Length: 88
Picture (tube, rainbow, N blue to C red):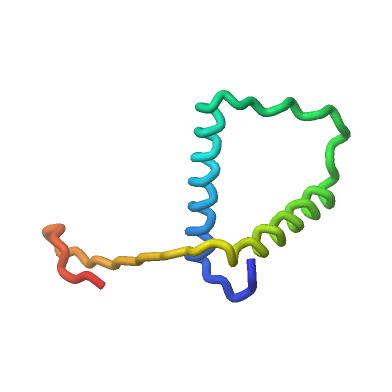
């Protein structure tokens, strides 16, 4: 993530990613596509896992410009009876 990013944007982005993954998993399962079994190999070192994750993050950030993100925030204040007293 670029420096200066606010926490809310990070949380929203994470929620969108989780939602997209859930949709992809559902579509893969319902289409009958099966994933190949992982190849037997030696486990990756922690440094290699971090290196691969950082490379993927850099690729993802490079593709961010290809997408549009819209955020809509509403704030509502409720009175003691539960009715909306103000809305921003």
